[in-house]
Length: 187
Length: 293
Image (tube, rainbow over all chains, first blue to last red; front, side, top):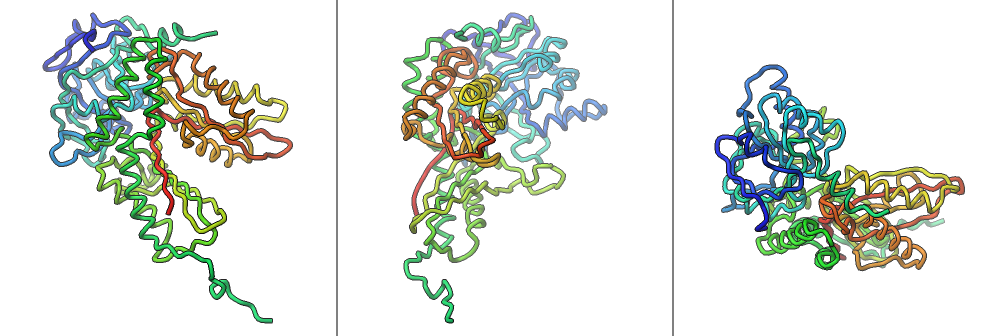
């Protein structure tokens, strides 16, 4: 994957780094992400909406839609590929309001689902769904920081290294899935 | 008149301890989650040559690599170990001993999930109204009674990315094959990247509302190298596959020619007034493993 843009960030992602990305770009991310799933997204969004303190700041953060499988002894994390982003779509406006900048997941977002990305200049990255074993090897540390009662849906902080993603929605609001599907469709 | 109880006339009855079923399920769930079926791996390897989109080709290469790494490192191929679907073709001359057959399957899933470091992906109460432990592992069990004294087990770990975008529709006879074709294409098109393409499309046609869905599940779990026994349905499978691959979705919806690896159709007679059609989508990681007790 030599053609990928290498993007390393510390203490959150900078606007300038996101600004230069274009829908369809292959990117290798190195930095910190916070995991998100159905149950943790609901809980986080509820906390934002009721003004409760969050277990971790989302300011300038990247969320990763993932619920890893358990680590075997000696492993950092079990398999850890992306889950479908659209299931968490209704919680994204609140999370963007709390400072979220980008999300890694899988699957498509269209129409109304794109609205929070457009209004907050958010970026949507897709990792390859069903790449759980390979992507686990791009994670250098994993720890549960909150919501451990949610089991696989607990909030993890993950350090990712050269983590391969594709830009699906960029800051201009261009949607790569729509472009790519139209380009390759026959008849 | 003397009435003989079935127990007395038990010649030919094969007794199987449910512990064997439990241990077999515990083994199958781990093997299925660490090793992609060989026919799917071969189909993915073949698809690399066919894919014209560079990003699509690279994605297919990553998928193949993922399956190689998972097998080598003995890791789940995907973190979503799914819902355990257990299909039992149960010989009518089998008698289970040692406990409940259903509990044995559940316990096998529990033990395998634990031992294989699989994710607890099932919630006990779908309404989420009950607060349960979070480590519930009931399976979905389908039992078919067949002649003989064998037990044929097909185990599948069904991920929900593709399950969530599956669909069922009750057509009428006049709609016919054109409607079936359009429904399959619409379902795959609407699912897009969410089903984790390249997908396998299982199409169940006929029977009743619930049996169409079960036929679709059987179809999606049929190996890709086993084609339909009926020539006309085999041709329809081929046509559907070709048209799906013209949709342009491509691997992971990144655009390309390889949207599906296969289309499998299963049929059952239906009412003169009806045409039930179910489409069960399987991701590229449709994990299944079969054995016979």
